[in-house]
Amino acid sequence: MKNFGLITFMPLLCVFDYLGNKVIMSHVMHLRSSLMTKQNFKEELVNDVQGITKFHHYSIETILPKLSNSQLAQQITNALKFPIKDGIVRVETRKYISFYQQNQNHNQVLLNFAKLDFNMLQTLHKKELSHITRWWKELEIVNTSPYVRDRLVEAYFWSLGVHFEPQTSVTRKILTKISFLLSIIDDTYDIYGTIDELTLFTEAIDRWNINASEELPSYMKIIYQNLLDVYNEIEKELANENKSFLVNYSINEMIYFQEAKWYYGKKVPKMEQYMKNGIPTSGYLLLATTSLLGMGETATKDAFDWLTTEPPILVASCIITRLLNDLLSHEEEQKRGDVVSGVECYMKEYGVTKEEAHTKIRKIIENYWKDLNAEYFKVDVAIIPRVLLMPIINLTRVSEFIYKDGDAYTFSKNNLKDTISEILVDPII
Ligand SMILES: *[C@@H]1O[C@H](CO)[C@@H](O)[C@H](O)[C@H]1NC(C)=O
Ligand SMILES: *[C@@H]1O[C@H](CO)[C@@H](O)[C@H](O)[C@H]1NC(C)=O
Ligand SMILES: *[C@@H]1O[C@H](CO)[C@@H](O)[C@H](O)[C@H]1NC(C)=O
Ligand SMILES: *[C@@H]1O[C@H](CO)[C@@H](O)[C@H](O)[C@H]1NC(C)=O
Figure (spheres, rainbow, N blue to C red):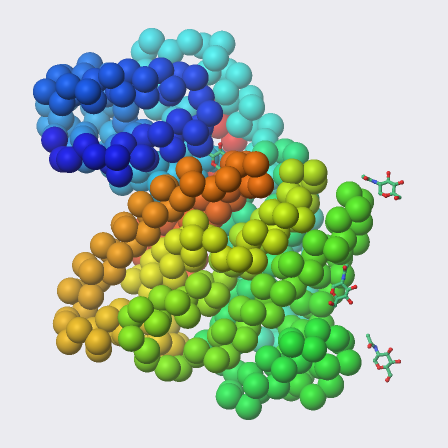
């Protein structure tokens, strides 16, 4: 067994907290006592593998070959590929229902309810997506800026990974629109805009006033206009809960993101500096802030102020996302434009091959996951209730998920397409 220090134990506790689930809690308690005596831990695993599958993948590698039950082995294989840090609730639920159905001892009533619940929520999600699609059809951007990744459904899926519950519908809508525009703006900086155009665009963004768009080339005017429109709409939406003023937190992060893109765009700094720059350019300061809009009473002004201090948990999330993106898309992005990536910075600074840089960067990502888990427990819950930390954790999980098998967002291929169909199109029958 690998070392069972506090760090290893941390994810187990997190799982309990994230799932808030008594069944799983009993597994944790069980585990906690077995952990006291390392020798019997392995035996415990063999007896109790189903519950533990979700927990920790190191442990399970050792027992996988001993299993005769193929359905269980499949479930474990899934857990190894998507350990808890990568799980997206809707995706995991859907998989779990299928596994459960194949289990001969399943409880039929429970199974029926689980399917009904899944399908009802899916109907709601479909309805939301169709509303958002109507908005998207009226945007001219896609015609006037043909270079952009036009990925509305993927942006919705991203938001769904952060908030899936029926009561978070407003937040989901806001987050989808902002992440869709974010990727358009990202492409404009990375692959299309000239330095002069981008300088004008960044200045206009700083002014944040429709009159500032006059100087812009026509394709940028349209992006600018759409951006301001969406924020006006969000402001109106938030007026329903007397929270219009919160829109400014998201706007400020949007401005910061664009300034950072403009400023850091084409330089190849040292790795440490690159990671610092990656905090705003990951887009996650913006998305994490945006993912608290529309959450009503819980998301207080204090919580938004806290986010602006760039707390370590958020920094970890940003850097993980920045580096995951770099690992999987840097060649493609370099083909499309001359964007600097962490891989390039690492290779240049340490004089290593691409493969070595990849290995090292994966290690850096793992360490930031440990930070993120540890920070989750350090945050003062009197100011920031755990429920407000979940969007940060869940956003990071979406990054892991999306970048797992290649850059599924950019290429919208293989697994992501199938997963999206399962989550958003096909009911469970
Ligand atoms: C984040 O994921 C956890 C489970 O891993 C889930 O319980 C929670 O509801 C999710 N948060 C949101 C806001 O959807
Ligand atoms: C834009 O300029 C016009 C004319 O100069 C002015 O009337 C209007 O108030 C300005 N709009 C904003 C939002 O500042
Ligand atoms: C918003 O403020 C108005 C006026 O102060 C008040 O009447 C209304 O009840 C408030 N709405 C909410 C959702 O707090
Ligand atoms: C946002 O900030 C700007 C400038 O600081 C201010 O003029 C505006 O009223 C604020 N908007 C809201 C909705 O509070």
